[in-house]
Image 1 (spheres, rainbow, N blue to C red):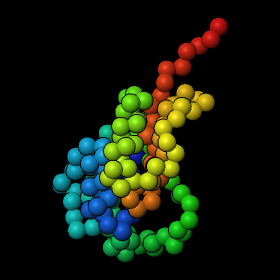
Image 2 (tube, one colour):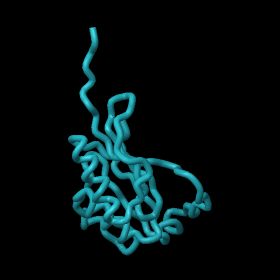
Image 3 (cartoon, rainbow, N blue to C red):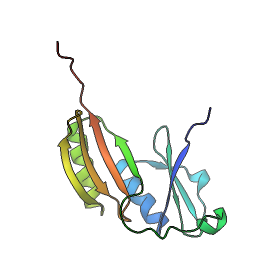
Image 4 (cartoon, one colour):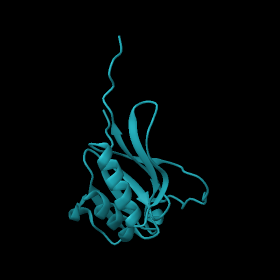
Length: 134
């Protein structure tokens, strides 16, 4: 069975993007993976990688020409409503754009939606316990 080991973002400024996620979430760099065109952060069960523009040629993958709208969303699970609010504020202070302020969804998840400094969408989540009604 296959498992996802990394989610990689192609970045204009790989070091700045990795630094943003390190500062906001406290993820540690996996320095053994560091190269002139790559950074990797230990982000729990799935690591978060950042590729510099030169990685496109190395991987034989053309750079995207699509510049409108979101093509994916990173999701981060947190431990409380307060943590969602605090990390949303910390992300904004580090250069993120708040797309949707923290709110409780109809499916009992407290979440905020943001864009990182390069425009990638990410969501901060806390799942409220669901109580069964009888």
